[in-house]
Image 1 (tube, rainbow, N blue to C red):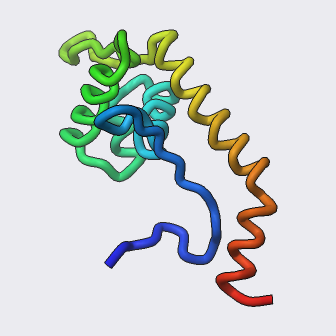
Image 2 (image 1 turned 120 degrees about the vertical axis):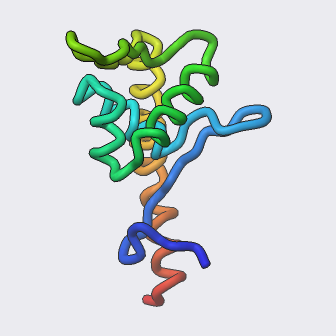
Length: 121
């Protein structure tokens, strides 16, 4: 059975897929945003309720998906580590968020029609 995150609402969850795999979707975008906000892959993962290992796996997957890294991470230790988005990472996140906003705005009428068809007039 599929578990719905927001069963009381209707909306879009956009995943961009090219070739043989996922380029970016809601989870990866949220991780990028978390890294931008917190300066840490681990903190971004915690904010999402994600394990440290999973957050790092997604970060590595994002870095191998694009022609150049989208995340730069420094190892921890006495001086502390950290992570930040590269200019390409900022560009990827901003483009994805713009795509989602545009789809929601332009598709509002269609979403309303689908919701009415689901729930009745």
